Amino acid sequence: MQYGWLDRSLLAAIRKMAAPVPIRVEIGPRSPESQPSRDALPLVRLKDTRALFALVRNPGINFGELYSRRELEVEGDLVRLLESLYRVPQGAVARMASRWSGWLQSNSLRGSRKNIHHHYDISNDFYKMWLDSQLVYTCAYFPSENASLEEAQRAKLDLVCRKLGLRPGETVVEAGCGWGALALHMAKHYGVRVKAFNISHEQITFARERAQREGLSSQVEFIEDDYRNISGSFDAFMSVGMLEHVGRSHYREFARVIRRVIGERGRGLLHFIGKNRAAPLSAWIRKRIFPGGYTPALREVMAMLEPHNFSVLDVENLRAHYAKTCEHWLDRFERCYDQVVDRFDTTFARMWRLYLAGSAAAFRAGTLQLFQVVFAGRACQSLPWNREHLYQKSGEPGKQNIEQDVEWTPAMS
Image (cartoon, rainbow, N blue to C red; front, side, top):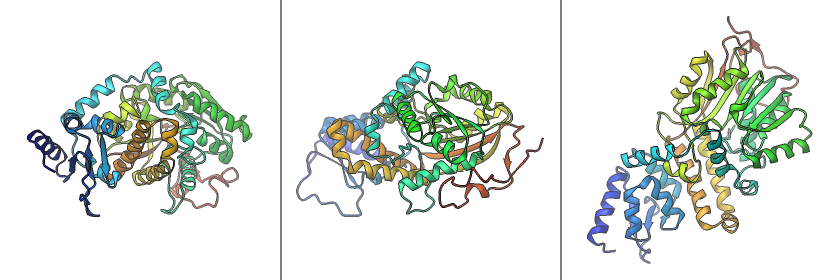
């Protein structure tokens, strides 16, 4: 295809921004003779020069906007293309747009409710289309590469319980409980009492109904409230997939809540999406998917715990497991894509496809990490002697944990 001077200049600018990735970009409809080889990088096809100019002007925002509106198509493997692009250093324009987006999405008490409502209160039926049967919307743990998503999510629920060393009769507070799967798992398989906080009305309603059906309402209390309002004293603090919604400016406040509820004798676990170094989350993700979101570097979380003299007991990175989790989600989403279009619209469906594909690509490329951090107060008397309890093999997650305690040793004073 013959392009004019402006198109050639804009295409050259795109290739320069994407360097060293040899990105393939074309404008206009595909010609019949255009048949890329199987090994070629996926091709980006733009509707017209206007779309190309928008992509050059702000790729961090407009790639997602154009794709959602069908003004940008990807011919070939979308995840592979995004994985390649994620390896390109972020440009100054994208960094600036990302900062502006963050300033406009406060995680105050009021702002957090608005941000959480945007993502989690779409409808429970939407998430039922492509999540596992328990609606666990966080990184799974695959004991083997061939494990199903359901098996991997149950294994993750059990893994975090073992890491925290839960024992019958203990009390646990969970900040950000999703649809309640972890709180119910802790109560059912580990014999603990749980108070679980969440500000998503749809999720809390679902969790309460499930607890009632399973006869666990006396052990688990689901509270529709902000984490800042958590009070009381607990043996353990659990947060899986919620720290990303706290916002960096509220980390000190978050840490004070943890210190207030577990004191010097309790222990805690943080499971969160993070980065190797401090950087804003994708501006487009924050605009369309996760308003107010921030994925911290590990040192930022350590700095949050340090003022309260918490001892860090264990740090693990499950990045490969989250890449695989996202691949499962994307595969299931593609199978129900037409249903999503019918229920919402094409723009919404393409937006979520891009988000899931981009997430899989980011974990593959190492742009995103998944950290699990276990910590305890300095006077905690429940520290493990070794790591055997983390990777014990069992036929049923948590099945024997109510009857058998893991061997622990008192902390040194």
